Image 1 (cartoon, rainbow over the protein chains, first blue to last red):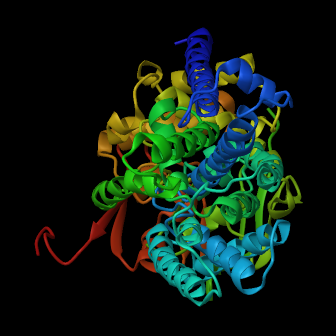
Image 2: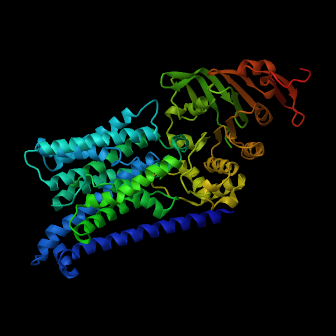
Image 3: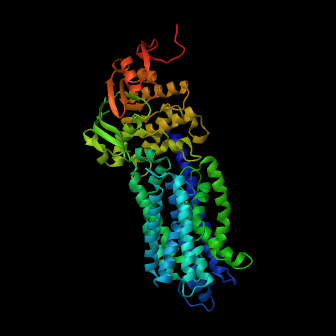
Length: 341
Length: 267
């Protein structure tokens, strides 16, 4: 084969990849538009556009501007954050089970957010900062607890599952001791919910996506190299230690900031990467596609929970119902073959 | 081709509390094939990992063209020095062409675009390893011998003047072992690539290497030409094995016949 054939194959893979990404973007935009137009009532597109442009439209200004828009925007931003952060962990540790929502990092951030709100009476950005610090703390603790002259994936995951259980009980305990709490709040911090979303809450999530998401995307090639094993990645000129540090901080930042606002929406971080990998195929990074899949999962999950199911469910319950069977499948499958994202 | 020098000076290295290499010195012959041999757990792989920056030295240093490899930028080092580790991981379902392309990683920064030279390097690497026909196949469908050739192709696509290989023939049957070693000799002769490899089979090491390095207990026991190194006394010292050395009728190089407790003529 000649270099021409290599070029042709590379271009074919690149074209397929960009087609997939553009399709996902279009679908996501369509989903966004639908959630703005169609809730319990229908708002015509021209009214939606006028609300978006800042005009006062009787009725629509409240349903679209106050209810649907903040919800949809937060769903997409949080979904992007969970998808990116989750896939980054899974790719770096070469194991789909090593997702922040399986190994306790999301719960750690959630526990910190609950503690900050309920016990310390904080709100806004302070809660985000608290969640990020706690998320990093949990990540470091898991790493330290599973370190035995090197970190083996299975040990890290088992330690993480234990930490996850501890964090969940800490959340329950804190909520039960809160002076006033309701089921809505409890569900937000245990499973994740977009109820009561406000546009102002989107600001920290957007900032974290720009900063931490940017850091992660710049490491895409190094993450791809890590898929070949640490030694091979290093032999290919990747600074493995530095890449790990950047990826952990950035991914934890993404997960924690989003969690501090909408709670640890169940299994989105866990599902997005493998679904994206299935769609884009093995030749190329699943990182960016995973972000899009994460956004689609949260947007669709929230919409289904509000309007498509009998009764109303918070988004975390819907995504949880999707993720749990996959988790069981994966535990059986990984034990048999050892899988890589 | 510029002849790069790689030299190991008073190197000590290990994992955790365990020091595996202790004050090891080695000068790699530029443009030649060097084979490192020794008993299990004598530090062969550790030496290779320390030489390629995978493991930081506790003492001493590894110098590439007079500069300590542990202080070089990883990407710059990877443009000159390649390493094929013992058990690299092929991502599930990845195609041969894509895996080999990843050898170009050190030639790209965050923003640089893939170009014609990359495609040519990949095509040449596939050609040299006779894996061109496999280019569109998934790596996990290949046989062990094919897969090893693909990994070597990835290291070739990196276009380094020095190539270190950690047991490139493990898990291969004898025909595939010879094929891989022939391929590495081709590479050495055609491109002048300096090759350093860890090998288990003493006779294949003596056959293919210009320079043999025998290690024992984290130290360099002896190094030199196969004739100098592969002697009954050295085999005894390094492996604790009695043996007889005869000239290999095929190559004229020394060949080791182990002496065990059974199946001796006249015994």
